Image (tube, chains in turn red, green):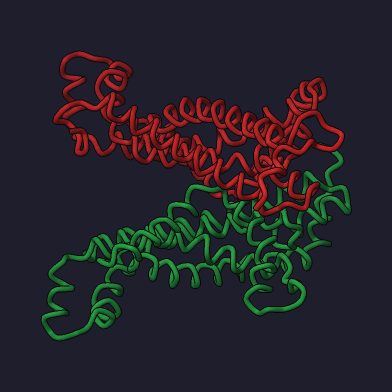
Length: 241
Length: 228
């Protein structure tokens, strides 16, 4: 193991290899951040839809979750990147105005956003369903509308309950950004492979990437644990001391 | 959409079937190997011998915090070097991505199966193992005849769900140019310039298979829940 390689200049590039990996890391984190926001919003909506009394909403929510859970992520990347622009002219018209990096970035965010949202929807649904029936009834009894009952009674409790599974979904999302390599986004894994291929120092490159991914996973885990402690309602949920 | 040609699928069907055969083969081998190795890891994690428990926990946490894609490439590059140092050969043996993938998936999935089996083992009442020891069985007999069969049974739906995830994850080997189901489709798509048709077909096939499998897993879960 020789660390000098990280300070060697990239041929035909500006900067050293460690800067290449750092720029890859930036893309990884950016994709993860935007995809998480999208997945959280969409997943909450779909998850809530599946707990309402409306038959068609439940059906549609179930179909949504099944659709994104039963197709491999890499195939979903290919669908968003190659198929969607080709079958929807409006998307194609927009995509050709973008530079390739932008196109890859948006594709990665949308693809991972939808993919992760199905998983979050599943967690949100089970969180809401784990609440006692009386919670919802109490909301209606004091005159709240359905929207208000979700907003002020059900969701605040459900989100707190599902923080641990959401933590693993966040870590999965960060790991899944590596699949964006398949459409050519220059995220961390892409840069790692590039470094291995151009310098033949696979061991150093992959070791560095491994350490970085482990550190991100740890950081994500700590942040979620911090949030869990911050929002804990004393005496309400197991684990909130 | 007027110029789509779905006949390309019919013509490529034997090649695609060949790819699917590899995908299924890798899934089955990795599942069996992963469950065996994962169960051993789970026993190690629950061991009262601290260094062993720590080593197993370290392995599992490491595998679970890095992307599968990274692991696939790690083994692809390192397996030949490792084998060379083990066998003392002059040159690294040519393993190829097809075969290194088996090692990768067994070792990677074992970390996930370990956590499932650990939960399964912990779900068995302590009295069960204690009763076994009281009868004079040793540790391995207690595990093999009393704890593990029950743990396995309780965790069967979760193991199946993980098997479906594994079935989908296998598609990542196509990035190493392996001709699994996705790899076969990518090659046809590029050769015949029929990207749209091929990727739609792959998506539909995966969806139907995984949907059927996960419905089966759900039904199994309901049946097991009633029995208990």
